[in-house]
Length: 143
Image (cartoon, rainbow, N blue to C red; front, side, top):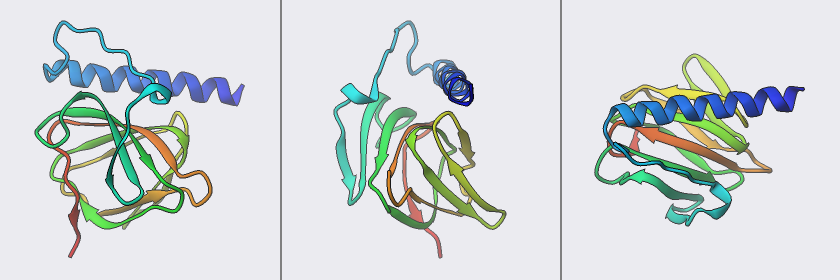
């Protein structure tokens, strides 16, 4: 029952995230289907790899499947644009001044642009998650 609820929640979150991208005009008139087990992941930096679903994360609005290797530590940082995350496997770990979140399969997290936070991957499983943003992806180390 709990697994069914999580999977339903993940599906709903993906639909909502897709709808946001559609409203931004990125997938206008195109059907997009993507499966992380068939995605072509490219290493972005040590312990982090992404596979494009739509858009180009170095230029503007986009969606990717993102993997964090076990124990990945991205340090304290911000992003210029909002980032929406839906957990698929393992756990995306998040910390800010308000506390900690463990974003597991089916869980959703919105990180506002400019919000200082720490992120990383579960020590044993790492993390596989859907990530979407209204603008290009950046990681600005916090001061």
